[in-house]
Amino acid sequence: MSSSPALRMEGVRKTYQVADEEIVALDRADLVVGGDEIVALIGPSGSGKTTLCSIAGGLLTASQGTVVVGGNDISDYTSRQLTDFRRTSVGFVFQSVNLVPFLTARENLLVVSELVGRGGRRRRKDAVARTAELLDELGLADRADNLPAQLSGGQRQRVAIGRALMNGPDLVLFDEPTSALDSQLGDQVVKLIRDEMKDRGTAAIIVTHDDRITHYADRTVRIEDGRISA
Ligand SMILES: Nc1ncnc2c1ncn2[C@@H]1O[C@H](COP(=O)(O)OP(=O)(O)O)[C@@H](O)[C@H]1O
Ligand SMILES: [Mg+2]
Image 1: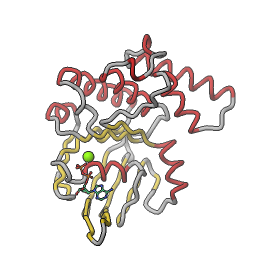
Image 2: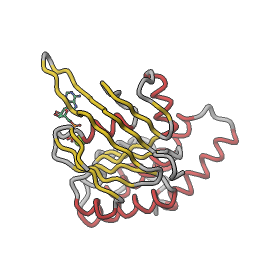
Image 3: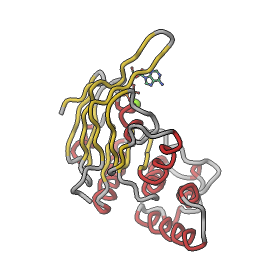
Image 4: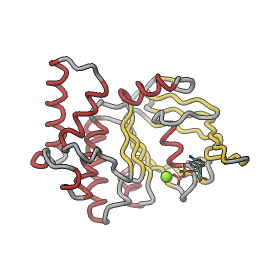
């Protein structure tokens, strides 16, 4: 798993058109993330971090360049192919946790497998077991039936991490996962992220302003004005 990279970006450029202005969000971005590597991505606000994660996760397409995730060259994928790719190959954890508010913690995980596969009783059973296992690992076994509003910020973020791991992703993208948490909780969540990724040998990019995160990462990559510098 660790032999081939989880992500290879080469010469990626991304521009946004706003009225008659072209905003260059990423420019000649090169980045390789190893199969089980955790990379911290740091840079000022507006430097292109969210854009980079969105492209690596197939939420946005690059204007130019090559993007290969877990061996799939997604550079020229259609939006339909990208939808499939997102369901099966990547996980996302955002700053604003965005759990489904009317589903319990357990259901927020289960819904992923329902999106991935056309049912089958066997599959459903596997998904239920996997959900229970993840919730247990994340210390949420006794919170499985709570709605997001009944959970603390840290617990919600843990549910989001579990959800991102449900499909056995090649790469998980964390966009400022601790910025809404106080520093002690943030620390716990970062440790948890590291342990979960390392236990599974799953690669991750963690966008952060937080120096403590870089401490838990294998490597730190800096970005400024859409340009990456190691
Ligand atoms: N949907 C969009 N439309 C126009 N400009 C955008 C859009 N998203 C981001 N940008 C611009 O692209 C640049 C990079 O943004 P972003 O990737 O969100 O940076 P970061 O996550 O590092 O704060 C910024 O100048 C931002 O204003
Ligand atoms: Mg951002």
